[in-house]
Length: 337
Image (cartoon, rainbow, N blue to C red; front, side):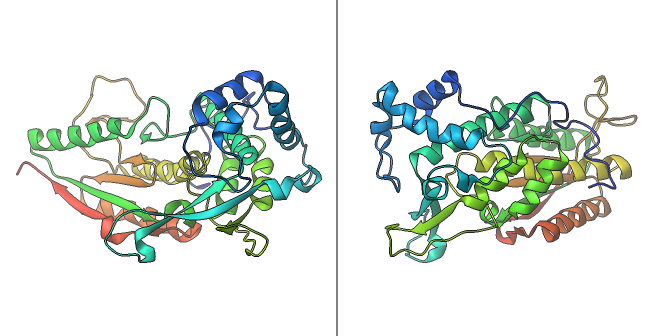
């Protein structure tokens, strides 16, 4: 990453945004309006969303005070906040995701969070989203879990590359890569390091939150074992897609830089009239990757170029501990036939 200087541009360096700072009335109102839904599963503290949504202003101040205590701590252990570790607890629950058996492979583990912890995560996610979007930290080809950038945009790119390869009579190699158990597999130390490389402020607050977070298996009572973890982010936690987007951004930037240095892209003649730094004198607008949150697609015009990109992906997975799901990863050769 350092060798290719992918952190030399489009970072959050100099941003006025912060993850720390007391809650504003606008943030609270947005949380109540958009995140508190009726009929959701009960959380560990037995406080349903309906109760929180109907609280008086005075009652809600109690929840707000705890969250503010975390958000305004300055490089101090979160345990100094009242009820810090006990409130930042979640219950591990399983959802049946398909299949005709009760095997563990047919279940998806999710974590149900206390209401105060949910609010804390919502505020951090909104602030983090604002920082990375305003400073253009994320790659333009990275879509999904981003406002105004659904995965449909990248599906149109795939369709366009396929159409142009047929029209121009060119061959393009495309590999769709699916990562196994993505949210649970990435190293917390690795994604915190990545955020620091991109100069995102207050990463130490996130480190403290993850250090203080605990989970228990249902029914999450005094007899349940308390679990801490240093790998992965919790399924159903609102910050998880955003954190993973920032993390996988490192791979997408590395693939792009490798392609620019070695001339590896789809190789089609597209958009030659566009004024863009990604243009190639012979081919116009070029790219060799797009992202779909936990899946990526890479392109090359030669087998050798594709192998180079696959080597980059393998090196990334080795460094961060993620694994490729080969059952859902495939090569597609696109040409005029």
